[in-house]
Amino acid sequence: PCALICSGVSRHDDTTQSWSYIGWRNWKLGKRVDVSECGFVSNPVITATTRVSHTGNGENCPSVTTEQLWMPNLFYAISVEEYTVEEASKQCDIHWIATGYNCS
Image (cartoon, rainbow, N blue to C red; front, side, top):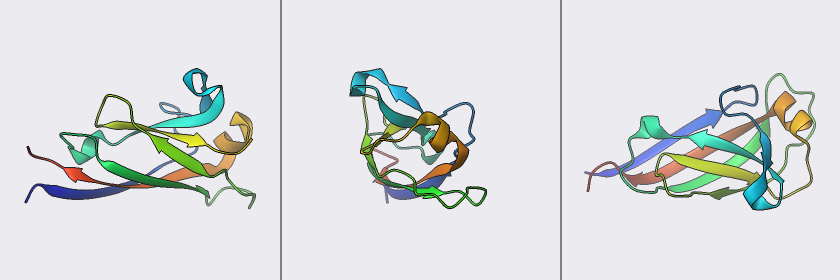
């Protein structure tokens, strides 16, 4: 079977793909997430949510939408609420699940 379900966590303190303001999204807060280890051959369907990390202070993290561009191995989690890079970088992990195909 070619169908695949893959999941992971993009940690708040990941310095290679950190939280930032995304210019092409009117400077909303967002984070790029790499799912290349899953081996998808086309864009998967991705669901993501944020959660305060185990090192966080218990504050809430923003709700996010997901947006995929042209590459099946990357997506952006984009905040739908006002939230700062400083707050997100201290505590907000992204938990994601992706469903797609690993063969044509």
